[in-house]
Length: 125
Image 1 (cartoon, one colour):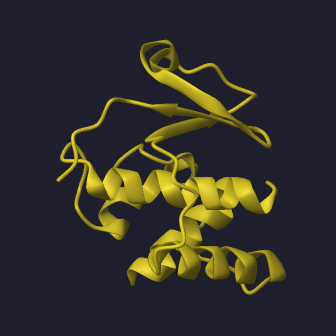
Image 2 (image 1 turned 30 degrees about the horizontal axis):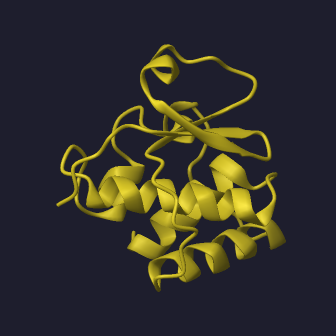
């Protein structure tokens, strides 16, 4: 898979029902992790790092379908990889439906759609 496909797949499965800004925010999180020394240094390795993103271990196919929502995810991924970013510092997020143990240890950045974003003070590469 290419970086573009990995990023689009993550955006689609993690945020396809979110506003466009929320999809861009997920892309920012992925790229923030790529830039952080605590995570792998390429998009596909970040996306498919074990248990990093819920869609990778839910037992369902991780194949990007041929749908309008997938086309939007691909466009968002292209924008992000070409440098069009929101400028978030977030390295983590979760939906409003869950309360992960780690959230209380990170700085809350805000809410976009049904996702809450957090920054774990990150050293950059």
